[in-house]
Length: 264
Length: 199
Image 1 (cartoon, one colour):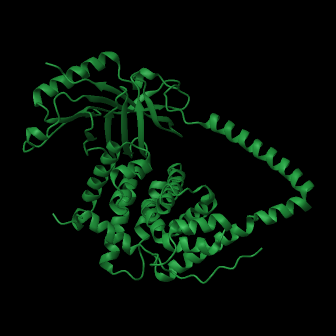
Image 2: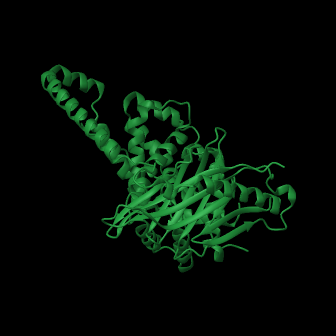
């Protein structure tokens, strides 16, 4: 067990209730269970109730059934009307996606990075125009490096805004990443405030890509989320988050494309 | 109908000669026996709360969710089949209860500030030394600063000692994803708690 585990275990032990608090909690649960038993008729009681109050029970059952059906219908209606839509429909898709021409350039850059750094590069990011290349330490032995045949991903994370009364969306923040598959990417720390963005991608056998993102941004709005999304091969972006404020609507969009390893 | 509850004895482990969990479950399934249910509560109370507390970081909420877990388990006991151990089944219920709470909180925009603010006062208990109080506040704040998924990864594998495989099943993600989450959670915690960790 290392130090962090020790620290957490000791902390956890100190968070335990006192014996009196345990006793109180246990009593509370026992009483709750007893009340639950008391509310649930035993089979003997049920049969007795059925013999004596059959008419009333029958009526109340129908009322209950109708009520349940109505609630279900309402719930389904609310679910469909308020269902979160991960696909981006209400804005210009091209604004947030990875354009085909751009993709070819990224693929070319991916192959060049592989050639140039022979497996030592981990990811390349661009946040609001600032470029950062992350590489493995020179001390990492070639055997520990990923194969130069490993595939990768291109990710574009975009915040778009539509001001009140305007029809057009515009990009207010964006980050682009080129990374090897299964590489955890942490965008450089010069993000404002306590912001932090990290992501991890994994290529699935069916050609789709699973991307897990942890986003904590303070500018242009405060958002904190942890999302896992599977992207198909269509390249369609996904909306990770949306918000409406007095200065307009905001959406956080993610676009992902798979990069193939260079051959030759 | 009223049910009298036997005297509560705070004792967490079963002893030699005691009925097994599965025998107690069977008694409950056969007759709704509250004594058997209480015995199960006694045995598993600490484990259930230990799963819940590090996720919600609030003693009062943890107590409520612990109670909710046992209530759900009690109501679902007729569906329990001894294919899994009772403790595993109960842990899954606790995890579902805690995930419901986490989802509810995540829907609220104010939750981040609220949880971090809460994290700074939650461990302020009179029986703690000043040193522990500061350390506990830092650890609680560090855990609160993690996203729910990363916190879940460290709680399940670091505190509950589940394997990444078991944790991945509970979280409904791939093992590779779980490894990433564990790695990332540990990195962030080590960074935030660096002054308390040996170099």
